Image 1: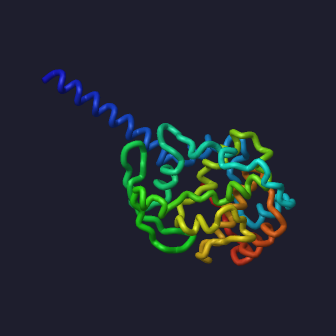
Image 2: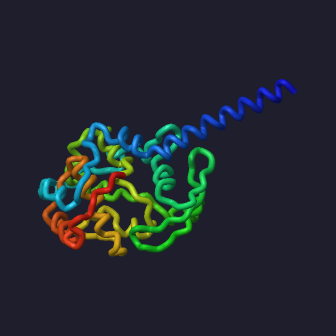
Amino acid sequence: MHQRTLRSRRIGAVFVIVAAVIGMIFLSSDTWQHQAAQPASAAPSGKAAGLLTTIPIKGRAPKTGYARTQFGDGWATTAGCDTRNIILHRDLQQATIGDGCKVRSGSLDDPYTGKLISFKRGADSSGDVQIDHVVALGDAWQTGAQQLAKDVRVKLANDPLELLAVDGPANQQKSDSDAASWLPPNKLFRCQYVARQVAVKAKYHLWVTQAEHDAISRVLSACPGQPLPSA
């Protein structure tokens, strides 16, 4: 009986520790973001239209040398939880968590299409919700990221400021497009979308092309007071 009691106490203690780690990751995303952002600039604040004027306008660099691995070999892991599941937990409503911090199910109010998506983890269903790099990594590579240190590129690719859980088909349609060639079908989200792109490009010292600048500026002209996202 004494040994059984000790075993129960040990199991209980392990459960508490695991729960505390998950809680710190999911409920303290600002801290996680701050760690992931270094040595890039802190996430900018203020109005998107004003910050856009500070971002350099240059031509697109060649895509030579680009590969997804230039931004890390898949998602980074923090305290046992990978970035995909951290973002799913942040963006999904009523998210349920399984072993290894994996989000098992939830509901997504998709910002790109405006539709409600029921998410359930599985071989045939996980792709219904994907994590989008708001500034596509291919675009980032051609607008300054290839000049960044490898560890900074990895942090960019895993920064919550750069990531959104979205409709899988819409994300596939976007591919490596910038704002000049693709905007979310949900017009009500376009101001927030381009504001997030501006915040990411400013934070990581990337530039915009003239066409990209003009497209973002046109969107923001309808919402000149659009604030920048914090994460």
